[in-house]
Length: 137
Image 1 (cartoon, one colour):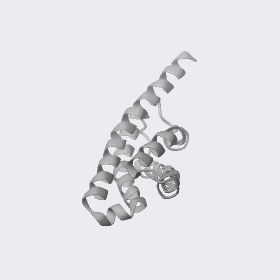
Image 2: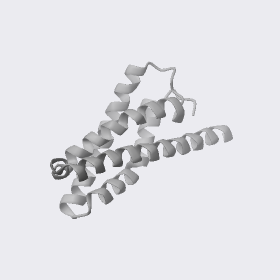
Image 3: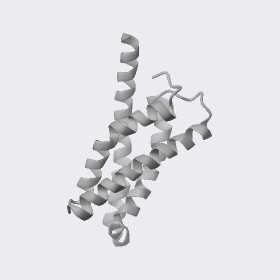
């Protein structure tokens, strides 16, 4: 129906806004660690994981409250589902970054942005169907 399409489009738009905010957090933490500390720069996949999880907490809060309006579900169970979905997303990101940086010799930040953009549709679908499935948006 028309209203379901409007609600879906609204949640996609909100997810994109939250995703941009999280990308800023994620990439900022990544840049600070890799550019200010040589050890973190040498271990870009570990740094990617850490920056991802810092942004992930922000992502859960905004997606739960604003994107999917899913605050009536128990927060702990919902966060566990969110974390599991996020771990799958992180695995895809790690593989993509490893392939682009270690095999194809792309700059690490270019690889990170590329992988985030390419996997966002899959991540949205998983969150919508498996994590925030009781949502109104």
